[in-house]
Amino acid sequence: MRQQRAAVRMRWVWLVALWTAACRGLVIPGAGVVRRAGQRVLSSLPGRRKRQATGISFLPAETVERAKSEGNKIEQTKLAKDPTSAWRDLFAYAAAVRSGKYSVEEIEAGDANIRLKWAGMLSRFKKTPGRFMLRLRTPNGIVRSAALREYAAAIEPYGPELGVMDVTTRQNVQLRGLTIEDGAALIEKLHASHNQTSFQSAMDNVRNVVGSPLAGVDEAELVDTRPFCEALNDLISLDPATGKRGNPKWGNLPRKFNIAVSGSRDDFAHVRINDVGLEPVAHGETGEIGFNVVLGGYFSIKRAASAVDLDLWIPAEVPAVLDLCTAVLELFRDEGKRGDRQKARLMWLVEAYGVPEFKRRLLDDKLPATFRHDAAQPLPAEPYRRRDLLGVAPQPDGLSRVGVHVPVGRLSVAEMRLLADLADAHSAGEIRLTVEQNVLFPNVRDPDALAADLAARSARLAVDPAPVSGHTVSCTGAQFCPLAIIETKQLAERVSAKLDRIIDASACDPPLRLHWTGCPNSCGQVQLGSIGLMGAPARRLDPATGKNKAVPGCNVFVGGTVGEDMRLVTEPLLKGLPIDDEDELARNLADLALKHFPAVRAKKVAAR
Image 1 (cartoon, one colour):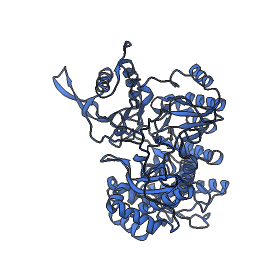
Image 2 (image 1 turned 90 degrees about the vertical axis):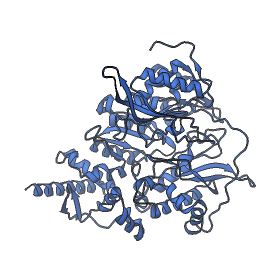
Image 3 (image 1 turned 135 degrees about the vertical axis):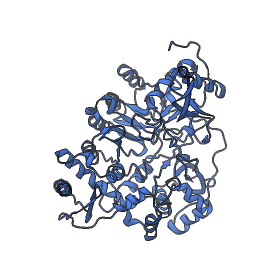
Image 4 (image 1 turned 60 degrees about the horizontal axis):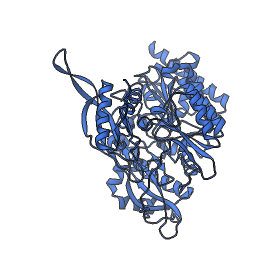
């Protein structure tokens, strides 16, 4: 009887999906066998007119065989049911849940926890039962005010603790607390009205394409990164066969993949921690602007690696960049490891070949014979001071850009609407996100008016934040992330404020940057921080018992840098530092800042 009810329920889900699809004029392809709760239910879908391409259909036979024979659990899940099915299944599940005939808890685990990530819906059931985080694609970090209001409206019903938005270290947007039906509805709106998608933003996909937040408004610009980021975003997430979001050609990579395009010597995109990084540089003989190519940068539990130089220069032309990235992605997709996921990033494939041989494979086997290229070109020798994106600065056209601090990248619904209002009033509706988790308004005619409007409506967001607070970066932390060992967002915001009252870091040039991450995956990029805190076990003496007890703690990294001389610090200076006493932690961090950086003690320490 239970099996019969399960079969009837699953058939009902697919009928709802077909009805929804018919209303939208879509074709819903279905597998001959639908798997749910460990059962197989034969499914006949009369609405299917043709077989659609899947991620697996683009893999060579030998790659599929490797995934079958040595593939990890994720690979086995992808083989059992192609993850690109999520681009249709999401809406079927949402329709069924919305109708009340199905509950989110009944979604098959492989779909709920893995495949729906291909649609940008990341289950966060351990922290927020039945809820998802929605990760969007925002190429070059550009968001319009109308889209920002759509985000705010979608998460407002969840209240201020759950319904929040995070600006990420990939110049991107993450929305918290969404139900599956609300997430699906928002994605439909973004597809229909804002040319924005969440598809292929998570798991084994090419993530958001990072560019310069000063693109097109920078006196020091070598390359306007916007057309490159937009073209790469479409290459990755737009199916050329259907014209719709979701490109199965890149729907079955071995692991995630990051691309960044820098526009100036400042390297606001952090290209050397990306799988493909494009550094702008003039050709030494002709003066033509192009890109030196670097490959393989990444963070993981086991390793933090800076990208290696490919000894390749390509012209700063969109077709050349698309050809190069396509070639690298094909090699990675077809030959990347499918076993140990800690060894499945691009760097491991590059190292297996060796840089010269990997370059040869690209040029001889993947790129067209007419592909224009040269050896890597020399970077400028003269010193360069990386600029700060916060505050007011002039543009070449006489207008101004205004960088606004968003503490630890976290925004409430009211703050989202405030930013949208400011964009409409001062920057023609445009907002740009930065990898430092802040926002920037370009093309501002009256920056003083924008700053005054902001100050009148918010005590938290600021054009001129305190030095440490303004340069604090944080991952999601234990509030929402199931992998985090410690809470980070709120703790980082409070401790940075305390630190600003103990020390004066205004003389630090470059700025003193405090990075927090809740676990060794290092989404908060602690190895790049002037001071980086990574969640870790710690112990503290319990006066009542005289014994050491476990408390929240961190490992502390010191000396990372960003810009064209980026440096990763891969070994912590301190291990097991307790963080349960915030005042003590602030004092310990102050001591590190005073010892290793040109910070000084504040003249007046406010009462804590």
